Amino acid sequence: MKSPTVDLAEELIRIPSVTPDDKGCNQLMIDRLTELGFSIETMRFGDVNNFWARFGDRSPLLCFAGHTDVVPSGPEKEWQSPPFEPTIRQGRLYGRGAADMKGSLAAMITACERFVGQCREQGKPPHGSIAFLITADEEGIAINGTRKVIEVLESRGEKIDWCIVGEPSSTDTLGDVIKIGRRGSLHGRLTVHGVQGHVAYPHLASNPVHKAMQPLHELCATVWDEGNEAFPPTTFQISNIHAGTGADNVIPGNLDVVFNWRFSTELDEQAIRERTEEILGQHDIEYSLDWKLSGLPFLTRGDTLISAVTESIREETGVVCQPSTSGGTSDGRFIAPTGAELVELGPCNATIHKIDEYVKVADLDKLSQIYERIMQRLLLPT
Image (cartoon, helix red, strand yellow):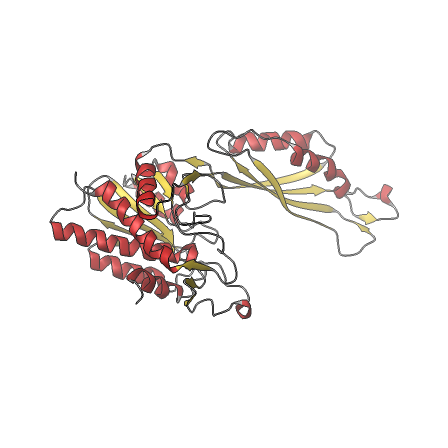
């Protein structure tokens, strides 16, 4: 017999909620939380459905945060079973979103159901409040999701003390890694301007590819910082480079380059921009450069939530977890700057965004138990 957590995970996976359309996933969660006694506030921004659910009105506030949207499945014929038809094989639950992050959402809901039920049976209300911040705009451009909900909460002075984001943080076994921070992400789009012409008459043209080679090499070779005890050194990567008209006898008029920094707390956006423009300015190139900041680096420095999470993992699994700041960005970048202690804890991430994404069935039930233990540690009256 399948557990309530697995049943709910299957219900969520069955809904093809490709970003940014939740397709009813949000309502499925809202219905479960409403039955528990949560007050629900739906927030739609643009084409994105979000909701804020809260149980209790006292501080401190523990928030579960996550997203119901998933990335596209890719070619369905390459899946062993349909991506939106949850299938269990050899102890694994397959389906798009199983690990990222519908399994975590199901575990959060069932953990709350047990915890709230326990409090009611004992006649002891939680020493604080529980909330859910759920969006359908995490896998996409992330403009009308968590970012906007946090702006609403901040405008009315509603503060999150502790936040658990259900991103798939584990590497080899459930709970072996938790994320206590993330690097910042800054994108640059550079256009080096030249003069188009015939390759046989280079003196009548100006080749932007040639002009860009040296400054791009310098950007790649630059040591931006040495990192620190919490973060690895800042990295610079070119993700796309393009020039040309399609004809092999034409010197292009422009070269377009897209690059990205994943930066530590040793740097800020302004320092990166100034250093980049200084390097480009040392060369004989005409250029334009557009910037996009996806998120600032953040790090949880308080130990209340981290201790509750690590002890709960150890008690449930026997695993001694490793705090980490590696990986990409998450919606934690919008929540942490409000002052919340934030930890990302979810299942193994080896198959996220891949064909045949899966989560171990046993891990879903363990994860739900871990979430419940965290609530007991933080919110049960002493």
